[in-house]
Length: 162
Image (cartoon, rainbow, N blue to C red):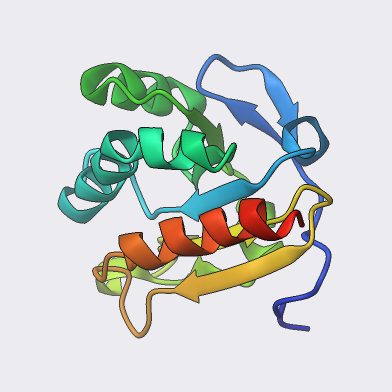
């Protein structure tokens, strides 16, 4: 069943770039922006993560946490975070289970049979873990998210107290 706005976000436990197991629950209590991306060190993904990095003051004003999620292993994510000075947690969905749960598994990326990644997608969760906004790149993960809209939706959660 596909997720929709108003659904409770699927819970997960994933390793971060430091190989520490992190759960969704530890980030709740404030708005959470989950930014799924296909792969580190690829053009559009680099641009997206750097744009989120450069917008962190706007997310901080909304008291929101930003979390990047990809199928890359933690070792790659650590180098990715270091190269681009990413100030937010990156989580490794190397089993692809969380991408599947969120309905954003992109199969056969670039026509490579069996190369399944996360599609580019953004989920904004309220402090209780309820999905309040969703955006997915379709039909191709080469499309960047509407950053201003993501920030506006995040700020709206803070102003409404949800």
